[in-house]
Length: 256
Length: 326
Image 1 (cartoon, chains in turn green, cyan):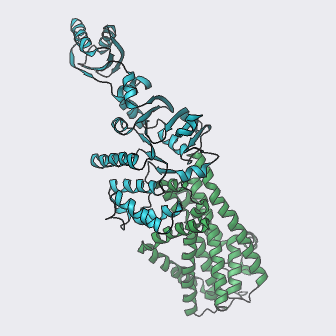
Image 2: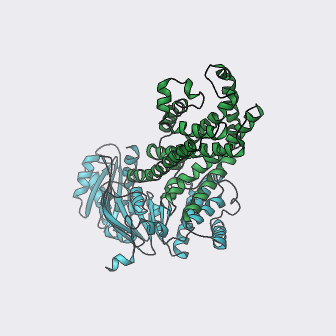
Image 3: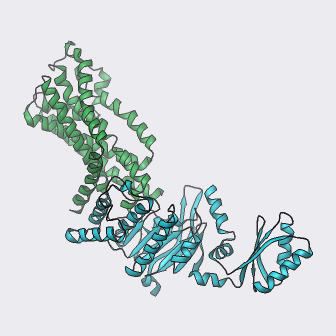
């Protein structure tokens, strides 16, 4: 009860800050269009490669772009923590009876909501471009799985933010990690057309888990066993990363 | 023990080291009686903020123990957090949110609900002169208003013990005077115990009913401002000299009857005189005899600066400057 109440308050704070920055809102609405249209045009001929079995590239690409948006937007969640630490807001929270988990939940929920809205834009646009989905349920699973991945990555970002406390360090880590994680998956390229080592490495990549589950539910003949197992893995990872983000405060408090 | 139950804060032998090198606290002990404004006075870097962090559960001491509002800061941190209000050195408000939103959220965190929450928020906005600005983002506030919002945030849940970590640093003189009045009013009307850290001597002198002087992570003196000044028997003598013969003058001064604790600072000499009225003519005569020119000689009742000099072995402003440079 208290946990939910505190989490809601922190979420409210992030949502308020978000909608009060119109530029930020506009950018996050435009960005998904750029990914979809740019990649859709750039890699259109992929569908002509012998062995590509997924119909149109835009249909194949849509779940990949939705997951990619989850990775790229959620990885910056920790910047808010660093800002709070530098300003003194974090210290005010840490000497209050606030539930520690709420501090992580707030930023993460805001990122998940933002990913969901961006995902809907991408899905709608792809629909206009001729992509077909397995109904509302399939799209809902795609968005839910992307949200789950966003929560995992947002929590990791928060934990790293508390441990490093440096904008530059977090920017470095995010830049280093997010694109390789995205490309080490079938987000943009069908698995059977990837080099063997890429598809081998992708098996251990949470981004790939989300892509597989989301694509299977949204645009393929849904494989519910696969979807279930991937959702299970991502949920487990979320528990671990949220615990990491909350525990990171202990290390922070020991060091100040 | 009776002191245990009547102390709002009791710190014993606190030690804190950052990394391998920086010894922030070196066996610090003091206690704060309930209902007082207690000043923790020291130059920058003396360990004031570290002490506040430990007493408010933000940080942990390497060794030693402390109780705040009757609760152990490590074993019963949750109880401490409910009982204290903290106004940190850095601003703690959310700059993007309005003053009212800041206070509402703080009130929820401390478990206030319904009409009680709304009333308390309205009351605090009014008391701290923020009603007109309540629905503007806090980042648009003036420095003084931002500081008052921080104080309001620390007061939402009517804490038993309020920590004010350098509450007037960075404020202009007018805002500082306002803050002083507010602190005095709080202690009078809310019967809250206040721990105030400051590196302004005049602030400690004016506000604190008791104070501890902290230097290099240790308490070097503790008592009421008057008690501390009374300990210094006699008057403070300040002498300014022209360039030459300063060292010689110091030696001469030490030989004058009734003079003690001679200290040299640039072209200035400071000393303590059992009876200033008789000592000054005697020392000027002695200087003239040896050809040392005195530019000015003043006598004053002991100040906290003198108290600090005596206990820390260096002048307060020097310590401040040195720590800032370091």
